[in-house]
Image (tube, rainbow, N blue to C red; front, top):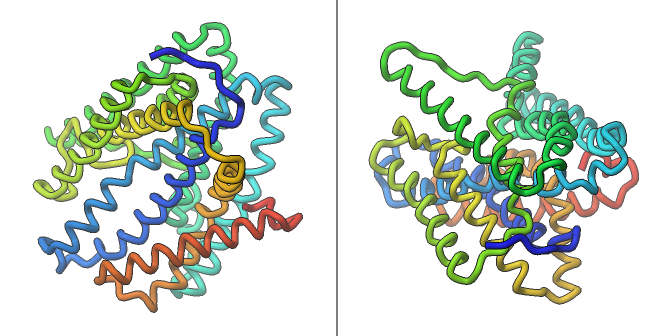
Length: 349
């Protein structure tokens, strides 16, 4: 395992991001079937669980990809002011506009929910205005502290990055394990993540993305990482089948659980290793780059498209949900790619 010099634009990170956003869409589509409690114990629900739980690692891998790019010295070469100007010029308009869209269009108009100012304020403070919008707060928080982390890492090389990532990952797992243990002992100590605190459990993964960006495993290492990643995915699927959504103390079935961190790191290393050994054709690399650049817009718009499709989709059918996944993903990419070419519209995509 040795760091290798790579070009600033790594095609494998583009490919991994495209796969990850497809995984996010699949998670939300498969979740429609999981809402039917009367299907518990059936083969189709078990299949939906396998897909839903088995793809949860794509969320932490998104954070790793962001860290690999955001903590690069190149990104901070012009100082923190320039960094903030560039990053927040992209994320702030999206954060503001899409919160309004999902509140007004989806919750108030499409779902007919009553408007209560208090609910809106609490939804914003808790980063729970709508399903996956918490991720915008998460990334914004990591952007805020990125210049500090990058400056600290710059003086210590990869070894310091590995140390920071390891300590932060271990600390996060201990905090959540102790919180769960306290609840089991009758002294609940729940961890509340709001808009301003969504970022902190992901610092370890954020730094790990930068630390591992140029680590190319040997062939045997790639095989081991693949096996470890698959095992880390299989464990929570098995655990869910045995215990249901109730998690074991040290192995919670969440995107912040240790198994998902292990899976994300393993598959990230596999992607880097394959990227160093394989060279796609120029046309393939260009397509991957465009799809990767459109992934942010896909994340933002796909829940709106799925909301439009839901009334026409038999959510108890795996085949119908597979079709809904294809339509939602294709339409989301199409809208994002087109919006990216329109001057003002691309500000929120």
